[in-house]
Length: 209
Image 1 (cartoon, helix red, strand yellow):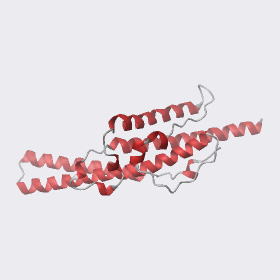
Image 2: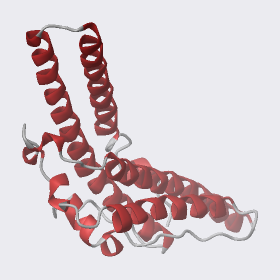
Image 3: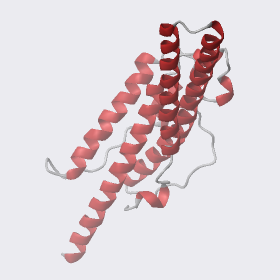
Image 4: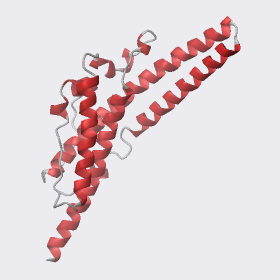
């Protein structure tokens, strides 16, 4: 089954959230540098308080951005996985479903929601072998992160922006989780495009023969 990625996946799905997360991190680092400069210069109490309040606000914004990317990347990765699995099996790609899958669902049961996907490769020189290897690496990064670094964490902290409050804004949400989810989905989509091109070439070769 040949399919163009843009037929079933939005090209910028999750990317806007990823850019926003980077901007939030940059802003947080900028505010932190201001705080350090004021402390070094012996700024008065009011200036330090303002800088400290801004730092708390920037930290909260960064935590919220992690949640936004985690939510977007979860939907991105799940649908990309379903489409890629269908194409790899020669089936018709599914349309997006209406069910709501949260980051905590994937954290709790990633094997069910993100099954291993492997496209057919014809041999050592086949271009899909490289794509399959990239898929395997990206999936290992994600699953190892969930299995080894996120055990015992509150998985629900990645589900809702409202969970980030002034007090909870300093919770240690792993930005690596949201990034790894987004990276895995992106690798899936890239491999899907390569696989579809390979399938079209193979189909054309069979037609000519």
